[in-house]
Image (cartoon, rainbow, N blue to C red; front, side, top):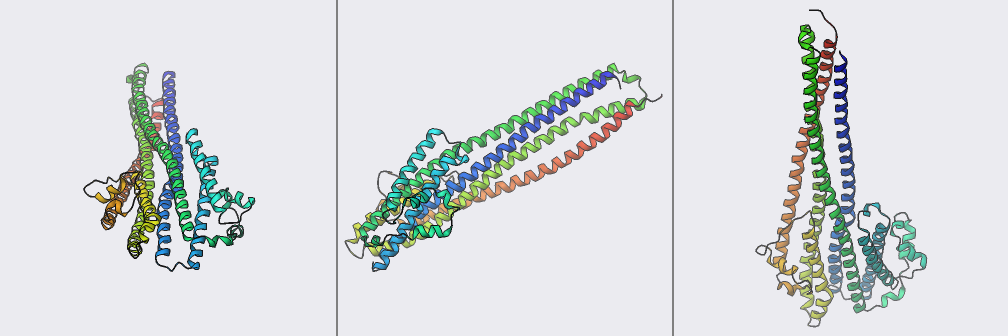
Length: 465
């Protein structure tokens, strides 16, 4: 083998190594980006999206539970004590949740994508809410500074003993049972408003994270497209260069004057090694297409479970709504003085809670439901006029129709989940085919390497005519 051929072969090997290096650079970077995307998406979904839905649903259920206690009991002292204890529990839950989200904003690296200005605004809002909740909780518990420090550091509560928690919650003030029903109701409304504030705060944080994850998703897709184009371009350059080297070596080495076995080995080895270029290009493209499919599957999985969580909450809201309406009608219309009391104390916060959950549902990326005026007239009327308090009168008493519309919304959610499942099944099948193709290409590459090397050796061994 002459010097020119050695030089040509060395350049070809270097180009092949450059192709491998460029593939590995983009491939590893893509996998790292997908891993970071998965971590941020799961963090947002588990700590904000699902939590927002649960908080909104919980507000509706707590309003119903309190109303149920008042409307179906004789309002004795035991009932009052039960409600006071439950109210104290809600305040404790509000305080620890607010503290935990404040800690996240200060310490959790997953929230680092948030703009600094937005982080400061969210933290300020949560700290104000925490201060209000602490002042309220002191009305119910005899807490010292150490107890308050414990409550305002919710992260620490994950590692504290149950005995310490029991010690905190056993400090309920004895004089708290002297609260009147009116005072209890006012406190309920205040705590309900605090929970709404908390939910709005974490929904805004979630929206910022959603913007970031969407940008990451499109960036990864764009990088995959760029990587595939670069790999194809590299393959074309390699093919052209290989063709030029082959013809140059064929002329300068005077292959036509070689013995037939050597001449045949020369052509066969070059042809076989030439096939290396498209085989590696197809292999690299397969791998990137597989990663793109995995990215889409990850997004679909996140949306599927968010959709399922919202659907389950909506189902519980429907069940609560059916019970609430019957009990509400019996209570309000049993005595004239109950009407105004029921409207202000239960109906408006209850319907505001349902409206808030509907708005959350429609804004969530996993649902994508379009409520048209024709099929959802009652629900649409409930969602308009943000400045007006919601009540049964807001929808002209058509609570039964709204319940039917809710069932249609649940049907739409179920259909959307089926679409996610179908899409993932399709993508899994595509990835299975891509894996089979990649395996076949690896076998081809191994065959090319072995056969090409054998024919190259045959060309290099001198033979007689």
